[in-house]
Length: 514
Ligand code: GAP
Image (cartoon, rainbow, N blue to C red):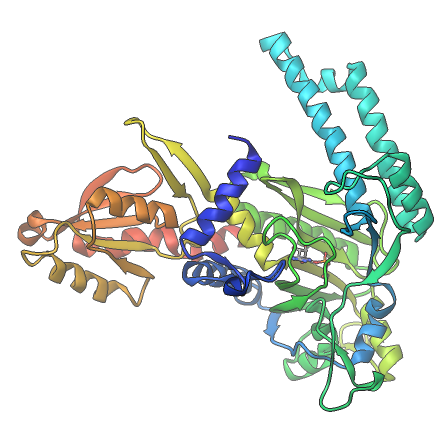
């Protein structure tokens, strides 16, 4: 099965089992907007908890806030979003379809890279065991030619974007002979800038002065509350402020399911440090955040750093943590050393001081900031795509299983009476009652036990226990493990501790603190 097919199946599966529904589906949906269903919200809440607690509970010098989505419009002038939060768009005159010019070029580069990978696979088949991939990539003429072509396009695109040269971007699209995937023609308009912020009117004022924006990032709510939190919380630099909340962007190209949405959620933390110490803290957060991802055990090879060579004017270091989604390695989280840009801008635009008095150095200064910023929905997609598995069993059947890390699984335990009679449901209900305040449990008595196991596999439940006639005599149940499908008899009073060990965040946090 290709990655594309797998991704399609994953999307269908998320809907079928109540993880994610297209928004407003009965009205044919709303592009790039999604609703989280009964299991999706549980998984989302668990991811939030993992992030929030790892920031706010684990670190004594990080606190959390919840700022409003609507903010004073000047904030977005100060932050640079009004002037520069743009994407370059281009229309195909025949299909009337709108594209991001840089995405068209990135897709073009991705096709060349696909060609290189095919060439490498050909080499692997040809040379068998003696195949040295590194050497092949460094010497094969076809690979080198394609690589040079991809590098040249990437460089030209970066130059055009950095210089904000929209004519050069259009010229590059023409030079690469990129055609519209819908109409197949190369009949393009000029490239224009498109601001990604959604705006609306505040109150009854309908002129320009009442225009406010739906926040495109949660970070600014932290910056403008920097002194409120520092003073009321008696925080000492270095310290951090964390926030989870909705953000809105009018993305031109919204695709790949919940990877790029118009309404999404961010988990952001701004860490305030002494000027001059920011690069040390940047390195620390880079490492801490990667360790946070890897601790989930979804496969270390699925993550990589992508350091930014060309930096935004306000940053002096930036990196992305990329995840291997079914459509390739893409940004999951950004870590940025944002200098004193944001606080400095708010100081300038508001006319209020944004300074911190450092009792250790007896100096006042505008702190420098390290930001860690992760999309909750992207994190959700990374978990689902790493977890989704169509597995061939020995008996020839296929089971679909979500190998979600147990700490994040929406349902931790399924309680299954073997039959709906003979007092077994009563025992099962009693176990449910005893455990439901500790874990999210699900009771199921319908269909054969095999079918019930499959249903739980499909939603990623790590443990099932079955209550049978023997249970009435020995107070033992059969516990079945999702990943290995192995089963064992255990006393009822052991169930809690077996599950607790695997689903508590504590071990992960202790691992991260080392
Ligand atoms: N405050 C910095 C900031 O907002 P960003 O790189 O634009 O930086 C941070 O966004 C993270 O938010 C990204 O790494 C990604 O995970 C998530 N994100 C951004 N745009 C998104 C979108 N349209 N849909 C879903 N997630 C998005």
